[in-house]
Amino acid sequence: LFTDFFTADPAVTVIGNTAYAYVGQDAASVGGWFNMPSWLCYSSTDMKNWKAHGPVLAAKDFLNAYPGASWAAQVVEMNGKYYDYVTLDGKNGHFITVAVSDSPTGPFKEALPGKPLITDDMTLDSHRANSDIDPTIFIDNDGTPWMAWGNGDCYMVKLKRNMVEIDGPITKVD
Image (cartoon, rainbow, N blue to C red; front, top):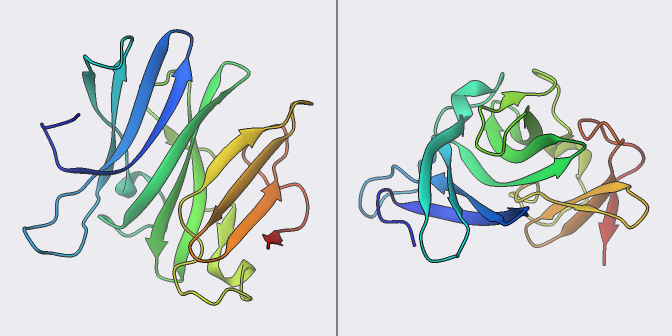
């Protein structure tokens, strides 16, 4: 679908009659390990023609993150705000955090600078080194937001309705 950049880890959010695809921009050299410095946004009202909105967020926009070390992300809308849940690498391993915007095309800013939602030391029971990646969000029928993530192991936690803090224990899903 997108040929202007090499992209990875797409996640689509539908808002009204528009689909927004958020993808990691992979700047790795041919045959190299991934190097995702930012996330790009594309939108479409017909799923055939896509408009590029450019980078909406970058790893360098987060405290304690290594540039180029971003993973999959997902954007969701809640109460007129747009929340971008991302995984990044930092000096203490992976962490999941959230950025917020007034528009689905950004710009997004780290919601609680330097205060991630999830860190590797919160899921020590995982059998995989890269377990704290690829967050996804869903809003329950009663309006309660939940986040799930994982790689090999699946974890889940309830979020506060402010969308930027966890609200309870982390559960490992069988």
